[in-house]
Image (cartoon, rainbow, N blue to C red; front, side, top):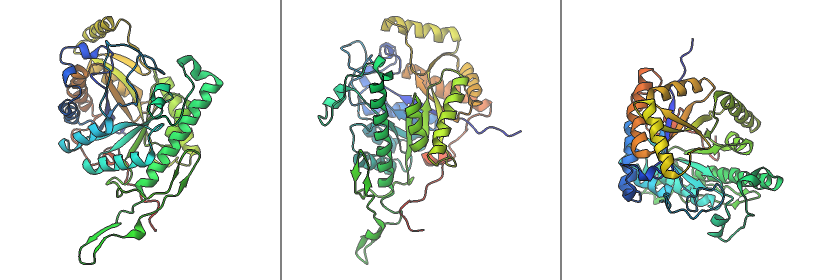
Length: 400
């Protein structure tokens, strides 16, 4: 009987935690939220736990309790630092863990993103990735003034106009990713000569125009940044529905999904694998992670009581697009190993309160999984692609 591969684990970092009242908890450090030291400490803790990578949440508008529009609340965390810049600040102070900032493709030029993530890959010595996100919010579009969107409430997302808009945004995201990937390849690996004697720094024949022409972008290239150390940094995306499942199958190295049981997990995985095959990528590795919001304590009742107390502070019961887990690290280990049988390769955990639940992951869950032979005891690779078992891809423009 074959032994299943070890689990991959990531943590999603967002403010002081995913519960809206997390900032009011002892140890939440809200006064440090906009300091470099705060983020360095969190990622260092995640690295001590041997996690594959961390993701950094980001957006182009203030956080909101509404899905599609801003609110006027002042009792929740509002404001954030730029995710790419935070990752770049953390990178020199870590050695192994992957760093995956969120970027909003809808209003950000792919040339800028390709350069930023390539730079992060250099700064981190091959540990960079990105999480692609789309946005249909009117207030975010208004920051740029280049396009407008109709008002899209949650109930409108299932209407014909809502579905059409969302499909267009994900089509644009697919083009965005394709341009970014081509720009990463626009320098061959040996394009830099750096030969003082011959006065040649680069071989101009090994820089390539990508000449991308699509509905959403027209980009000539080449990039101004040499090919990243990983060749292609990791591309990931959160997928809730069929249109985003297709994006993962077409373009991503990792998809984060949000089923609430193993039956739904199998259905989502099947849909993504079908999209992957339709895109001609059936032989390429594609990781599928499930997102879980976690509240962890030494006793199940303590975790449940803590969440209930946070719910009282927030004035409502916290729910999420992802499954919300309350319990012990051992119980979470049971759940992860059960869900792995659905075909998942890993999990992205969202700590309910980062100041408490991150250490419960690194110092409680990880040792429990190690005891069961389901998680690494040391880092086995120096790059994020290596940690995920992904080979460094060949350059599409290099001569065979």
